Image: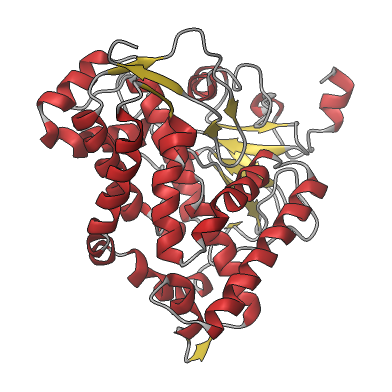
Length: 404
């Protein structure tokens, strides 16, 4: 961006010392080495800064600053969540509902995602993990994203939600398309309408054919002494659909990619399976996949910046776990790290409801992977391509093991 355009894209209330150009979708390097490219911001920019790109918005990168913003429901709202801002952007419940109203919806959902509910799913999680790992062991190679990381958690999620399994490919394409086109107003609107149409069809089917699944539960559930409206049902299932069909897939893929280059870590987990809990928590610290937007709803001066009404703010949750003020050698994978603080699932009123399920799925998948596949490596000479933006992903990951 040239100097004239830069000046016109920076509001008067923004201190010039806090301006740093960064494109959350296309910044140099993030398509080739996403997390490490984002980590440059800890060295190159203030912990809270203004980028004039993508309509102009704040970016918050440190653990403490992100925590301060996401916990401050007085000044920051989730009601607008597209960067650049999009008129009439699709709203999802309860993510885009501010406290205290969001808590009524969260309380309805919590029983389906509680530790007790996740433990009740142990048998199904184990069954599906065995199914997809067993399918690739003898090959000596796989494309991890397509063969394992999407198949396993998405299948578990579709069973939980009560979605028709014969629509697996269709639903994955919709979700990947949605997140791949963030910033494209027309495409996001088209894909949002398509997803909501699918949710309306699922809801209609479950009204006529109730079952033991999440959609039926929501149809029959109540908040404040009443059933959810049709609009509330669609917007709630819209959010759950987007989260369940993509985010755990991405965390698994990023983890498998890094550990493919760490034979020492692989041997450690193979020799000491009981360390899998620490393994997964360290993987989650390093590989957050969601950046969460906020819009300023009330002027406030904090974090050395002047936030003004209607400013957009991007909280880079993946950078919180890599904050050098919190962690020594934050880019290193250390199973024995004592302090594993991160904000991969956010915190406060919008803490991800699915975090217990995500952890359970990652523990089971990687336990079986190291038990059955053993040591593995990256296929040589592959070009890794990443998707940046609000939900980040690795497009493909080719792995090999044995004599292949």
